[in-house]
Image (cartoon, rainbow, N blue to C red; front, side):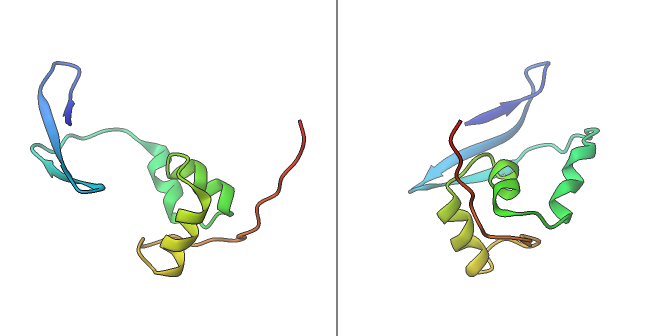
Length: 84
């Protein structure tokens, strides 16, 4: 996997290592990402599900239980189901 800028310059490469990726940052770029600070705020499990790219809720709960992610603070672990 390679991450490119709009001008096709490689800034990051990733290598598959089993079920994970090892990522190497080739060059740091400055981006204006105001929403990046939302990870500092606690949120419910569905908020974290969205913040983490819609990964499985049981996986988020395991990461929180094992303290694998700094700042993963939840206000609620309840998942509500509703009919549309």
